[in-house]
Length: 345
Image (cartoon, rainbow, N blue to C red):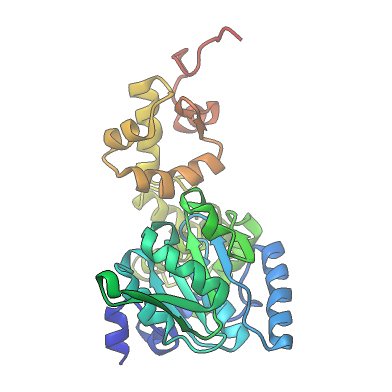
């Protein structure tokens, strides 16, 4: 059964927890979900109200860059509500019958999670409108003149949609979500708390200074923090006595080519290309993506958000431009190029 549902793009994480590599580090309840305080406090109120009324939670829309905990929060919501959790991604829903097959098996009040919801096909999206509002499915029986439409009732459910590109989600779909949660990059204090929690779960001793160093190098992203912690654990085990110290972390970051701001080699390469080839910018996203050998989506979804958050890059109507801080961070001399020289106004 689990294998069949996995092939359809649906899974029950409670049945697959042991198979997921980082499942032990995922928070299991809102109390364990660190950071995003305001969003978490509001969500706890909505969940409590839905449970008291014995109703399904209103549809939930999660917005934010990759690795900030959208999927994890969706699972936490299901656990807090005490209901089952089904998950798929928009690219896996190829035809309306795929969505119909899932929704007809969703039981009352369950949470149905769609990742990358901005990639839904129009026909599936339109079917989802009615399902979200009326808890019914429009289905066409027959062909040609004899074709007719019937409505199939489904159980009230909670749709949780996650996206890294809220601007690509159609307005009619957004308007059907009753709750919107926007994820921000995590503060240093929250990142340190996440590293401590993960280290405790992994049973890895970590010095307090090493915790701070890992946190500041994790790009404000829990997924990156947990990945770095695992790698530092490896270095500590092989090069040291098993304890993650500041010395181990510095050596590990040097070997992984990660600098003090958490920039990886490819992040610095993007900044260097803009400076050295395009005189600091502006340069279009497609041109920049070709220059660094990345897809435009990867550039916009993974690399740019943190570079902008760190104050190293700007998105302008004319294209991408580096800031003065980028020159300083890379140790490069700033020239008066098209993006840096004096302007008329």
